[in-house]
Image (cartoon, rainbow, N blue to C red; front, top):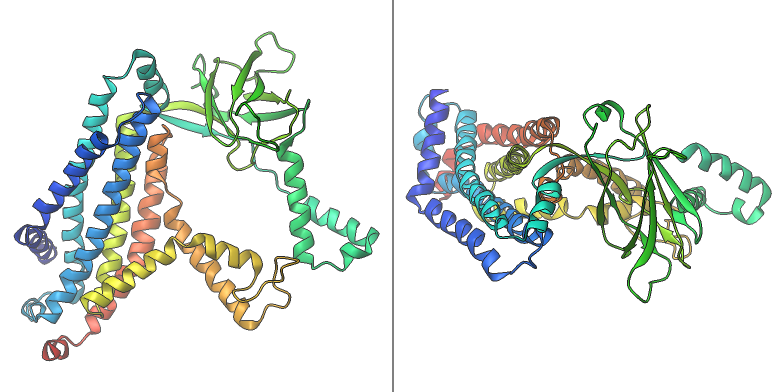
Length: 460
């Protein structure tokens, strides 16, 4: 442990010696202070949050991420190329301790940078919030400076119905019987989803959300509805009339509101407290009085938000998840530099990041079942080859691995006042740092332990 911490301390000091820390701190604090001054908000709570919180945290994450990757690739690769690592390797220190010590040193540096920069964002957000009009400060306190939990209606499981309809249609329709099964299954699934999502003119859509164990905690506390819908025809005025009712059906406690809302954007509005029934079921209905149909996506068309806690602790948990990302990037860079030169290690690491952000392409290939040609009539591969099958399997595995990391969005959660629970933080530590970071660490330490350093020194 003493050797480990000694190497971590040397790595940390090296960043100061090369003036990385002062330059990076100046860059981060300059961006945090100058960005809100250059981009003016619109004087609303959401506008302030977008500029001071969302943009700044996103910029901090991007700058620190690239710096972490650059430092991790350079600190080990350059020492090997310049024959400096041999001085440490001949001492009674295991190779894995050298690798792990450098990783810890980069983590200490990231902790310092992240604490200073995100602390500045928090102070600036609190200071500028005091300059908002009273009604916007109230919106900020109710919707942003909180940790809100989310409740949704359970996603319907459509597969049994899809299989039943598929069997019925194939028996009664010869044209459908000749369609590829995958295409017919997809078509029926989309038809079922459309029935659940579309609200025709004059019709009503009902959601029933089980408050569950939170029922006692939500007594006498207002809740919020967050909704998003699409219109079959774009209204000339830009908005549609929406009639919302919440509460037990045929109950005097039922609340009603007639609102003018624009399609294709998120809306949040409060509903009175205690509108759920004795079983903890909150019933919400939307009536469509317009001449056009509207569609509420099953994924994010409707949810109920409620207060779980305060902003400060939620902010800390969000920043901690960002720190987990930095730990993973440090492990990735060190693993690449364990057997590659600095430029090549940086190129490979950035290439892996590009792959990680190309999930949309991977999803398309998985859905189509091919990486080569697609039948324009069916949108699917006619006869997938062995290469297609192998590629799809690889992409499914890659997508599962990438989603382990990308499944966390602390910046979005903080910007919308969503709760980041301790369980989410624990999952982030386990999935991002322990599993993914541990995988890269095992690869990097194993290669570095077996690498012939003298040969590398002679080439240098």
